[in-house]
Image 1 (cartoon, helix red, strand yellow):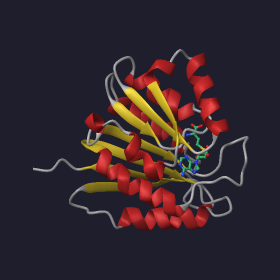
Image 2 (spheres, helix red, strand yellow):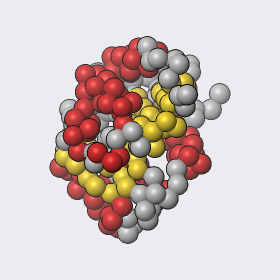
Image 3 (cartoon, rainbow, N blue to C red):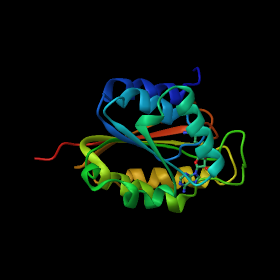
Length: 193
Ligand SMILES: C[S@@+](CC[C@H](N)C(=O)[O-])C[C@H]1O[C@@H](n2cnc3c(N)ncnc32)[C@H](O)[C@@H]1O
C-alpha cells in the first residue's frame, strides 16, 4: 500500500472546513508552511494564532507570511502551546475552528528541541476548551525520532480517553506496516444539544 501524505490529507480536509473569517491556531508554527496555508484559508477577515518556542521558527514563519502577503492575518507568539489560552482573545475562546499540531523538531533546525508529551497533552486539553462546537484538533505525530514513539503513544492514549459523547476521533496511519511512520489523530467536536 502506498504511503499517504498526512500533511496533504490534513490540508485537503481543512480546505473544505475553513472559510474567510474563521479563527484558527497553528500550535507548532515551525517553518510556517501550515501557518501560511491557514492564513490563506481564513483571509481577509479571520486570524491565525501561531505558536512556537523558538525565535528561529517564528522568524521563518514571519518571513514566509510576508513573502506570500499574508502577514496581516497572523499573530505569532513565542510561547509554549501549553499556555496558549492566555494569548487568545477572550472573544475567540470557544470559537476556534481548528487547532493544528505538527509535532517533533523544526526541519532544518535544532533536532534537540522537540515537542514533549507533557506540553502536547496539556495543549490538547486547552485546545478542547478553545474549539467551537464544530471545531477540530489535528495532531500529526512522528514516532520515528528519539522521544517520538513515547509521545505518539501518550497522544494516542489521551485521544482514546476522550469523552466519546463530546468528540469523535480518527487515527490515520501514513503506513500501517511501519511503526516509525507518521500518525494523524483527528478530533472533531460533536454538536451538543
Ligand atoms: C515539525 S515542526 C512544525 C512544522 C510546521 N507546522 C510547518 O508547517 O513548518 C515542530 C515545531 O514545534 C515547535 N515546538 C516544540 N515544542 C513546542 C511547544 N511546547 N510549543 C510550541 N511549539 C513547540 C518546535 O520548535 C518546532 O518548530
